[in-house]
Image 1: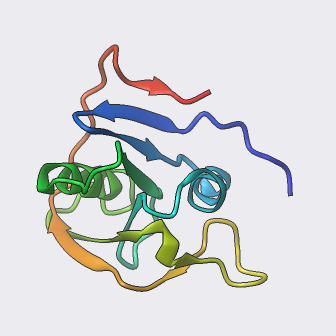
Image 2: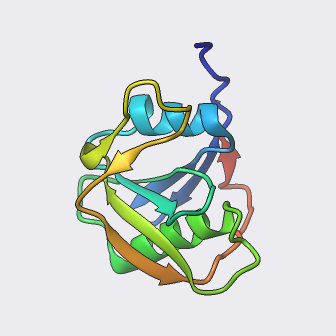
Length: 131
Protein backbone atom coordinates (compact mmCIF):
# COMPACT_ATOMS: atom_id res chain seq x y z
CA UNK A 1 0.00 0.00 0.00
CA UNK A 2 1.53 3.27 -1.14
CA UNK A 3 0.71 6.44 0.78
CA UNK A 4 -1.30 8.79 -1.45
CA UNK A 5 -0.43 12.36 -2.25
CA UNK A 6 -2.84 14.24 -0.03
CA UNK A 7 -4.26 16.73 -2.51
CA UNK A 8 -7.85 16.15 -1.50
CA UNK A 9 -10.21 19.11 -1.62
CA UNK A 10 -10.49 21.33 1.43
CA UNK A 11 -13.08 24.05 2.08
CA UNK A 12 -13.28 26.48 4.97
CA UNK A 13 -16.87 27.07 6.08
CA UNK A 14 -18.35 29.03 8.97
CA UNK A 15 -17.52 27.06 12.10
CA UNK A 16 -15.63 24.27 10.40
CA UNK A 17 -13.96 22.64 7.43
CA UNK A 18 -14.96 20.14 4.75
CA UNK A 19 -12.50 17.65 3.24
CA UNK A 20 -13.35 15.68 0.07
CA UNK A 21 -11.48 12.65 -1.29
CA UNK A 22 -10.96 12.57 -5.05
CA UNK A 23 -10.15 8.87 -5.51
CA UNK A 24 -10.16 5.60 -3.55
CA UNK A 25 -6.71 6.21 -2.03
CA UNK A 26 -7.72 9.65 -0.79
CA UNK A 27 -11.05 8.33 0.51
CA UNK A 28 -9.17 5.62 2.40
CA UNK A 29 -6.68 8.08 3.87
CA UNK A 30 -9.30 10.70 4.80
CA UNK A 31 -11.65 8.26 6.50
CA UNK A 32 -9.20 5.93 8.26
CA UNK A 33 -6.16 8.09 9.01
CA UNK A 34 -6.98 11.79 8.77
CA UNK A 35 -10.50 12.04 10.25
CA UNK A 36 -11.01 12.28 13.98
CA UNK A 37 -13.61 10.08 15.75
CA UNK A 38 -16.10 12.94 16.19
CA UNK A 39 -15.78 14.31 12.63
CA UNK A 40 -18.84 13.59 10.48
CA UNK A 41 -18.49 11.27 7.46
CA UNK A 42 -20.75 11.59 4.39
CA UNK A 43 -21.24 9.30 1.38
CA UNK A 44 -23.96 8.71 -1.19
CA UNK A 45 -26.15 5.72 -0.43
CA UNK A 46 -25.35 2.79 -2.78
CA UNK A 47 -23.69 5.11 -5.34
CA UNK A 48 -19.96 5.40 -5.96
CA UNK A 49 -18.60 8.71 -4.77
CA UNK A 50 -16.24 10.71 -2.63
CA UNK A 51 -15.89 10.37 1.10
CA UNK A 52 -16.66 13.78 2.63
CA UNK A 53 -15.46 14.70 6.12
CA UNK A 54 -17.01 17.58 8.09
CA UNK A 55 -14.85 18.85 10.94
CA UNK A 56 -16.28 21.42 13.32
CA UNK A 57 -14.31 23.54 15.72
CA UNK A 58 -15.40 21.51 18.72
CA UNK A 59 -19.11 22.26 18.43
CA UNK A 60 -22.10 20.32 17.17
CA UNK A 61 -22.50 20.69 13.41
CA UNK A 62 -25.36 22.99 12.42
CA UNK A 63 -28.08 21.94 9.99
CA UNK A 64 -26.49 24.26 7.41
CA UNK A 65 -23.11 22.53 7.79
CA UNK A 66 -24.67 19.07 7.52
CA UNK A 67 -26.67 20.10 4.44
CA UNK A 68 -23.63 21.59 2.70
CA UNK A 69 -21.46 18.52 3.34
CA UNK A 70 -24.27 16.22 2.11
CA UNK A 71 -24.68 18.32 -1.05
CA UNK A 72 -20.95 18.05 -1.74
CA UNK A 73 -21.08 14.27 -1.21
CA UNK A 74 -23.93 14.06 -3.73
CA UNK A 75 -22.12 16.33 -6.21
CA UNK A 76 -18.85 14.35 -6.04
CA UNK A 77 -20.57 11.06 -6.84
CA UNK A 78 -21.99 9.18 -9.81
CA UNK A 79 -25.36 10.73 -8.89
CA UNK A 80 -24.17 14.27 -9.68
CA UNK A 81 -26.73 14.76 -12.48
CA UNK A 82 -29.64 13.50 -10.36
CA UNK A 83 -31.89 15.33 -7.97
CA UNK A 84 -32.97 13.99 -4.61
CA UNK A 85 -29.83 11.95 -3.90
CA UNK A 86 -29.69 9.90 -0.68
CA UNK A 87 -26.58 10.68 1.36
CA UNK A 88 -25.73 8.78 4.54
CA UNK A 89 -23.80 10.47 7.33
CA UNK A 90 -22.46 9.36 10.68
CA UNK A 91 -19.63 10.21 13.07
CA UNK A 92 -16.32 8.70 11.89
CA UNK A 93 -16.13 6.54 15.04
CA UNK A 94 -18.92 4.40 13.50
CA UNK A 95 -16.97 3.72 10.28
CA UNK A 96 -15.26 0.33 9.99
CA UNK A 97 -13.00 -1.16 7.38
CA UNK A 98 -13.49 -4.85 6.75
CA UNK A 99 -10.36 -6.98 6.31
CA UNK A 100 -9.33 -7.49 2.66
CA UNK A 101 -11.94 -5.03 1.37
CA UNK A 102 -11.08 -2.76 -1.57
CA UNK A 103 -9.62 0.72 -0.99
CA UNK A 104 -12.27 3.17 0.12
CA UNK A 105 -14.82 0.47 1.00
CA UNK A 106 -16.36 0.82 4.47
CA UNK A 107 -19.22 -0.42 6.58
CA UNK A 108 -20.93 1.91 9.02
CA UNK A 109 -23.66 2.15 11.63
CA UNK A 110 -25.65 4.86 13.46
CA UNK A 111 -26.16 6.75 10.22
CA UNK A 112 -28.81 9.23 9.25
CA UNK A 113 -29.85 9.75 5.64
CA UNK A 114 -30.43 13.10 3.96
CA UNK A 115 -32.18 13.32 0.59
CA UNK A 116 -30.59 16.25 -1.15
CA UNK A 117 -29.90 17.97 -4.46
CA UNK A 118 -26.20 17.90 -5.43
CA UNK A 119 -24.43 21.25 -5.18
CA UNK A 120 -21.20 22.24 -6.83
CA UNK A 121 -18.86 23.97 -4.37
CA UNK A 122 -18.24 27.64 -4.98
CA UNK A 123 -14.55 27.80 -5.73
CA UNK A 124 -12.93 30.95 -4.43
CA UNK A 125 -9.63 32.03 -2.90
CA UNK A 126 -10.60 30.32 0.37
CA UNK A 127 -10.79 26.95 -1.40
CA UNK A 128 -7.61 25.01 -1.75
CA UNK A 129 -6.18 21.60 -2.25
CA UNK A 130 -4.84 20.24 1.00
CA UNK A 131 -1.11 19.62 0.62
